[in-house]
Image (tube, rainbow, N blue to C red; front, side, top):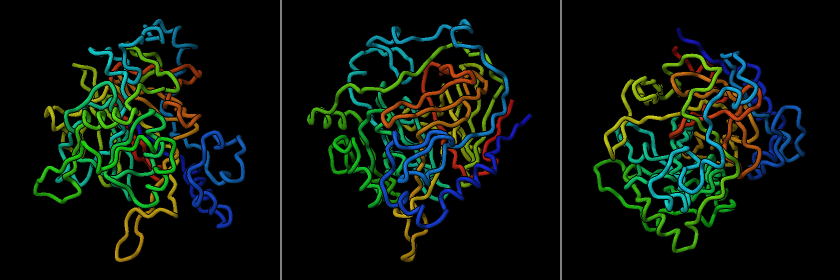
Length: 399
C-alpha cells in the first residue's frame, strides 16, 4: 500500500509569504551572503537578528510513522559503533573499516556531477565510490549531484559540472575541497568569499580532462581524484578532515520502523525510485524507470541509507543561473541546509522518522529519533534526497 507524504500547505504558504514579503524586508536576505548559522533561527520560536529575520524556519515533512523508539539507542540492545570503535581505521562517514588507514588521513572531495540530460551524462562515473551523495535541484526541476569522496576514490569521476549555492555549504560541512567546472558569477562570488576558498580545485588545475566524445562540450569534463589530491598535497591542504560531530552506526535495524520496500520521489522532470533488495540489504536506484549504473563498474547505483528531507528552498534574486534571450529565466536556489527539520531515513527495508540537525556551519548533518537520541545509520554509504519545499505530494513509499 502506498502512503503519500505531503509537505504541509501551511508550511509552503509560510515559505512563500516569508520569501516574497515586503520588498524592504526581503531585500537584505537576497543581497547579503548566506547568513552564518549561528545567526539563523533554527526553529520558529527563535528570534533571528534583523539581517536574517526574513529567512523562514526549517520545514518539516509530515511523518507517516507514529511509533515511539526506545528511550535511548542503548535500550534497544543494538550493537552501536561508538567513538572508541573508530580509531584510525574506520571511516567516520560510513562506519566501514578501511584496508589502508592512510586513506582517512587525506582531505575529502566534494565533487559536482551532472545528472541531465540523461542521454549525454549517463552512466556517470564514481557514484558508487562516494561515501555520501546529495541530490538537489539546480534550476527549474533539473537535479544535480554533489559527491563526498573520502574513504574510497574512483579512478575517474564525471561528467563534472558547475556548482550551485548548496556547494557553499557542503564543503564546510565535510571539511572538503570542492571540485567543479565553474559557476555563475554570483555563486563564484560566494565561493570565493567562503571559508574554504583555498581548497577549491578549479577547472584549470591538474586532474581535469576532456573526453573528446561526440556530445555537447559541457558534458565531456571528467577528473582524476588522485591527481586532485596531489595538487592539494602540493599546497599542504591534503590533510585529515576535522569532522564536527559524530555519526552513529549499527548493522542491526533499530526499533520504530515500518516496512518500506521502495521510495519514489517525483522531481517533476524525472521520477527517482529506490528499491530495496532483501538479498544484500541495500536500496538500488532507478530513474525514469531505468536502472542507474556506475560507468566504472557497470553496477547499479545503490545505498545502505537513503535520507529524504526538505530544507527550505529559496530563490536568490541576485543570482541568475540561466538567461534566455537576454532575460533571466532561472534564479539560483539557496537550499537552507542549516538548523533542523524532520524527514525520514530508509535502511534495512524500513522507514524511520527522524529529525535532521546542522546547528553550526562546520557541523556534520546528523539525525535523531523521536526521543532525541542519535539515530543510527546502517554501515555503508548514504544518499541524501533534498526535496524542494514548493513540491506538493512529491514522495511515496511502498511497504
